[in-house]
Amino acid sequence: MPVNDPAGDVRMSLSELVQRSGVPASTIHHYRRAGMIPPPVREAANRFAYDSRHLAALLEIRSHSTDAECRERIVESAIHAFQTRSYNEVTVSDIAEASHLAKGSVYRYFESKEDLLTAAIERLLEQTAQRFEETVRSLGGAEGLTSDPEKAALVFGHLLAGVLPMLLELGARAAKGHEPSADLARKVLRTLAETGGRPFATDGDPESAIAAGLGVIERAFATVLSWAVGPDWPPDDEAPGLAQ
Image (cartoon, rainbow, N blue to C red; front, top):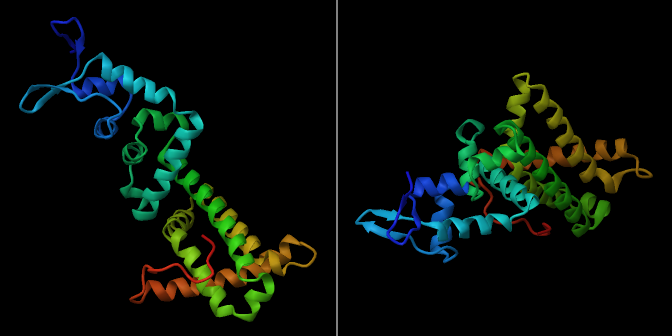
């Protein structure tokens, strides 16, 4: 329980400060090290206390974070988590801590870990599709892709390598009969194929683009798989011509 100090202020433990502010302990430590909140009061060798100054500072910091900013931090943290660990290894608490938010704050924006995975894949798809488009232009469009297919496969292989862990997770969930994952997997493949094949499309026909793009993706995946079973995984350097 919080206690009053002789000056009349309320002293709190770290756990009490976390509960009252909604800010996780790891984030409070980060803010303290960055000088964004005052240092705690040392009460004993290994015991520190916080007071109304700390609570006010934390609430002020939180008030300046808009909903859009918080959601952005959560999604970016989810992308990193799901890219580096399997779905079962990632927890909502991990993502909350990486986002410098309380776990309850994450649930304000996403109902479940499933929703977080979906949001992460959709954001990564958006980013990858944009880089696909930029890379096609940097390679000289359709003419550049057809004149040097090995380079195109190398460049697109680098793009796909970054999203491969999450695509494999999505595919595994779809193969187990999870219909939302199957729907999202189809959307991912269609979007990437249409983006990669758009330079080859006749009169902007999306079906023509998808057919051509599937060939681009097939060659890129073959490149990625050859890396994955050899000594070159993960690829160390960006491919020449890859849009940053």
